[in-house]
Length: 351
Length: 162
Image (cartoon, rainbow over all chains, first blue to last red; front, side, top):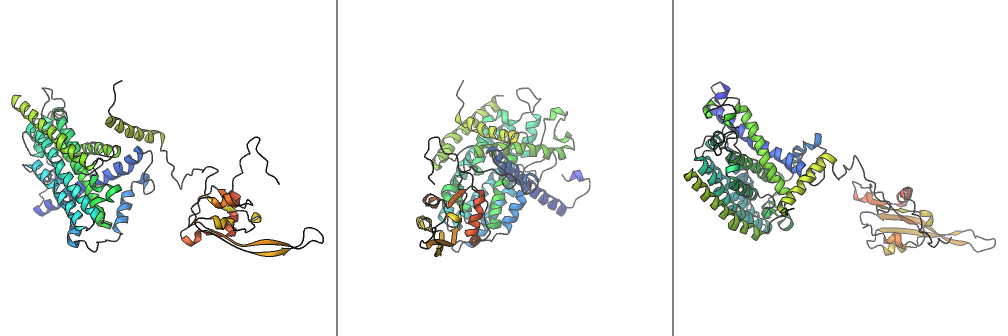
């Protein structure tokens, strides 16, 4: 990213640019997902128009909502553990910002080129469990506590199939670096046919399905929204939050959806790249410089595709019961992903 | 045809509705800009025909919410026939319905023996202050203009005796 500017940027300048880029890379997908999918697509799927008043076609509705939340009173329950209560939304949002650090957006457009990137991503994504448990416990509210514990149980249960699904990709790519995984997909070939590269969504289809189900549960989107089930737990761990603390939880939910969609598109859809064979690039060093501009656009398009699937499923299915949810993770997803790993490693060794 | 699994069918329903809304428009109405006309027998607001009211208090007593307030007094009117006694007539001083309390059961309309109360389908009378939902005699009289024509009687039905 820095070499593109053709001027020497000092270290503090690079850091500042990275922070700004990170904020844009987290908040832009979050805002787009909320407007395009949550406001508009959900309305259309229910045969209504959704917000239409604020701005053309309600495009400024989110700005209005943020303004509304910011002017609300910041309430802390009397018996709550005030310091923990105030900290927990920040912890949840923090895990999202830590996640974006390893996502590559172009041949040179990355925040850090981390050798064990996907390992790091899976590790920090479980930080949000901590924030949710903190929120549930410190609220001094039965519903919050139940919601927090349900969330913790669910996130831990679905973390496993997610990690196991990713292992298939790691075996096939032979690296844990997200940038290398993108390069491996775009310069590879499927059974001798290199016209499409080798997007792992085809060769790792089982892994892709397991991964999508697992991130659906990680994001606590319906049908896996037992922790915030509004008909029984009010709003789960978010019950006691109001004003900008609720806003942070809300941003955290959809920003994490955006970042997980980005990671899913990196792992399975070829990330920022197009198959290198199309333009005759031999390896990543010969990739044209304009990919640093086009790459993020391709990336956002793929992210929207993945987010569309997540939201489509969210708006279509009713909620799982708590025991069904746990049984599904432990008895279906984990054995399937283990079998996927075994098959992948056999193919890797044989071929 | 092979049976489509319910999970896939469900996704198809939502996607189908999505395309239907985009191409044919939504089933909903953008309320302040466009309005649906409610059915003629909709229970919007109750109108008062003051001339028919004898302040008999039947409506006020049958109201489950006690939201009808009636006050009246008696006046002497000249006799109908020459040499008769002067008649006692009920004069209506106050007839208020508090729509903040009303639950739109319509018992008052049913119970009125003199056809003084009518349903009208008007519904746009919300107020910023709750006290303004107390409609007085004059306002209830204004609603009379919006009362729809009574439907035709069925063939062979007993005509109303004058």
